[in-house]
Image (tube, rainbow, N blue to C red; front, side, top):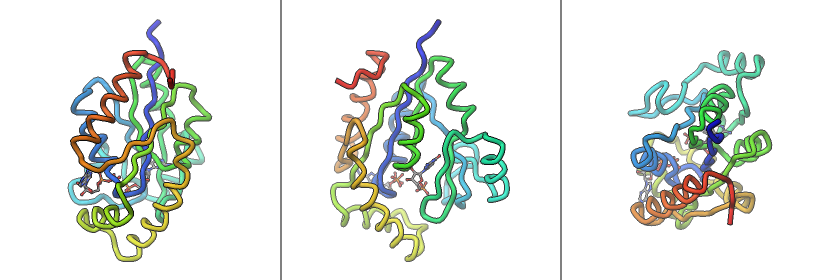
Length: 194
Ligand code: ADP
Ligand code: 5GP
């Protein structure tokens, strides 16, 4: 029987660069599977339904909660986000390693449900840099921006529950550190955190 897949959970304050880092990891590791979350948030320019997220109406999202289709869900920055139970279980039971991008609450819920989790927190170099990355990315109203900055401080304060913390300062350096970390677990094939 193949070993169960490992679950790599990435969290970071919004704008710290986890989407960018996930894309690079998936390019380098095409055999890893990205967990496509469901969300009620509107797509950003360039985001595709079924690729970046499953973009759902509030009604459909609530139906998924009620029918137990979500392993976890959370309200983040005024929108709902959730991880589909089937996609996690199908992937890891096939022995494939999974990459998830979820908030701190989601990371902690998934860790209690599955025993093959490696939690990695991505830090911005500073709050000033975070603000500037959020404004360069655009698509956030001033209210949304203020909410994301406030949440950033709370999320960074929770980084102690993660097994590893990586600072996304220079993109190339952070990609190398993250991909080496992931590769080391995949070589071991276990959550031996040492
Ligand atoms: P998140 O998914 O954590 O919200 P993104 O990956 O969307 O963040 O990154 C936010 C913005 O910062 C994007 O415009 C991205 O291109 C940029 N960015 C990401 N990492 C870096 C980096 N190391 N240096 C400079 N800009 C970065
Ligand atoms: P964004 O709107 O910037 O794509 O994501 C906002 C936040 O929602 C990020 O912290 C991201 O990690 C989190 N998020 C994305 N998908 C999920 C999910 O399925 N569950 C949870 N709990 N959080 C998620």
